[in-house]
Amino acid sequence: MFWDKWIPKKYLVKSEIYSIEAAFSDNGTTFYYTHLKNKNNKLNLVSTSSSINKLELPKEIAKNKIPVVLIANGKGIVLKKISLSENSEQNFEELIRTNLPTINTNDFFVQLFKQNNNSAFISLCRKEQLNALLEELKLNKIEVANVLIGAPAVNGIQPLWSSFNTLPTSLQTIELTNNAIETILTAPSENATVKIDDINFEAFYTLGFAGGLAYLTQSHIAESDSAELIAIENKHLEKNKFRFLMISLIAIAFVISVTNVMFYTNYFNKNNKLESELNVYQGKYDQINDLLNDYQKKKGLIENAGILNKNKMSEYADRIATTIPDEVTLSELYFNPKKDSDESEDSLVTFKNNELIIKGNCNKSLTINEWANVLKMQKFINDVSLEKFSYNNEGLLPNFEIRISTK
Image 1 (cartoon, rainbow, N blue to C red):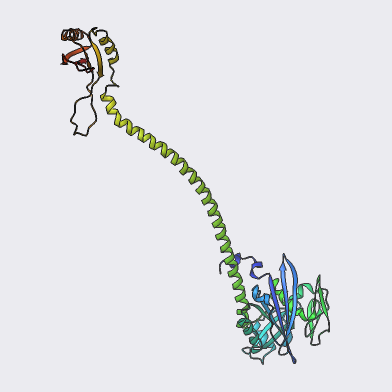
Image 2 (tube, helix red, strand yellow):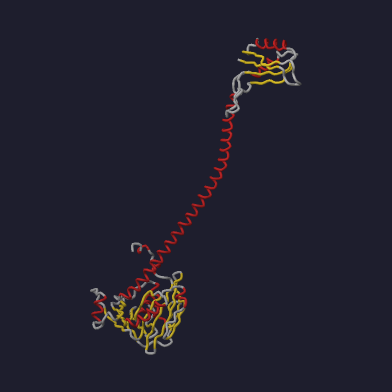
């Protein structure tokens, strides 16, 4: 796919691998289990174990979903060493047809292990010999990463075997010359051990160690034209690519989520602060509106009362007060009195501008008339009218009422 080239190579394999060597012999089949782990770019041999005539898979394989490299070795495996031409490139099919012309490739799994000295090993086994093991692994839901056939699988150790002349395996002894496999002897070395750097293991696990190391280092040590073997390797590779894609998508989604949370939190805090400020200003705005509405309601009343008019009502009142006779006692004085209106009408109260109403008590009508004449003589007064006069006043109630119109 288009994104394959973006995947780092280290993510095309898992960091742990179990190698299972099925060593076929006349006495039955012995299974050798080798657990390798790449931890911080350092190879660790975690464990080794074995079982006879029964595939007893370690529990951690299924528990931790560790992939498996299956290695078939021993009886039923045919090996042939061939020489490769230096000048011509023969494809896999031509090599098999040239060196093993009598076999039917539909009945066999065939692999080619090439070496640096223009030699190679062809290894093959009947399909039914391996299919039984592959089917059992499938039933146990074990993921097979690769299948290797025969002792040439020891090529997986090739980067580390420069100091060896021979390498013992479970069923063979492998002789090395010029950093390549020279001969594969069927006689194993008894009680042999292998030490590579600081890793030690018994010879029974040499092929398992080689197969696991080839997987972890992504060394393609065997070629095959078998569709079944190619499908096994490709399926595992595609699964690893899919896992990487899913992990990447999850990581991207997580980063986006964290970013969104940060932005949302920041926005939420700012929004809360803004809302708090808006609530404060809204309250003040409402108060201002209430004041404006109250002002608009009272504005007409204030204007009709004449408070805003440029007049001298207070001065006029003082000048009127200087003309009051001694016999007159004032009880009420109204500036800009209210106009009489129909109580059924829903309207604002209105006032008569530039008018005064004086109410008081006096027993002599002549005195009131003389006073009225004096008021008419004032330059600021337009008109004076005696609205009411009664000779009998009851208690403190006024017995006269004078209305004055000013300029």
